[in-house]
Image 1: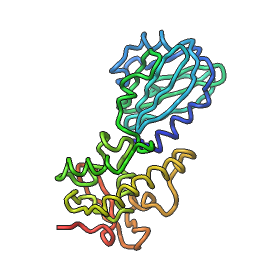
Image 2: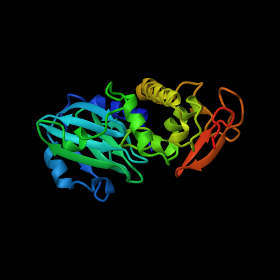
Image 3: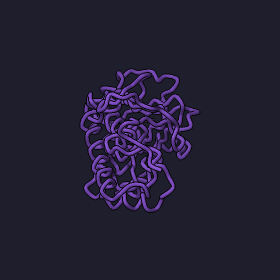
Image 4: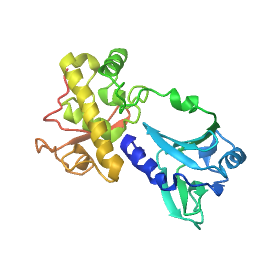
Length: 267
């Protein structure tokens, strides 16, 4: 599933259509991405509108259109955004296509776990404004992490970092990267983590999130070369710091990767 940085990059692709009118709309007749909306309503409220702006929050996207219209997108596991030629013919897995004079903006989702929402109003809809504090916002503080650790003392740190109520946009590889940099085992519980280590963990959350957005979120592709990311899925992958073989196992329901020399599980 695309994480915070990948979502930011995908969203930026549709900026090619900003300040341009939407001449026509294609909606896939059976795609499950419309489980919260009906297709005629989408056609009625998008055709003729101008794409005015875009923003992201965690794994969510919001596009503003003229006439106080808001289009929300969630990529799900396999969704992505594309820009195609203006005379583009929709493909099998294209859930939504916005046709403009110069190009077609495409939301493609083969497995259909994504989601489309649309709403009218002078202010962004509640399903956007009621989301948790973004990890990119100055209001994202150490207290949010501290509260999560206190509230869930029995949960593995890896599972806790993936909780979107506290860390919106954090995904599997980012959580592994954070814990590796903080020298904390993914199966460690919060009572084992001293206050000094909690503060280090918070700083590493900020470092990974901001670094991922500056690299992946801006240019696409992969994060910097010395990140754990480049070794975590390799057979025989080694720790970029110690050179020791990495371990991959399922923790908290998700495949996790860590360095046994740096991230030791405390009893």
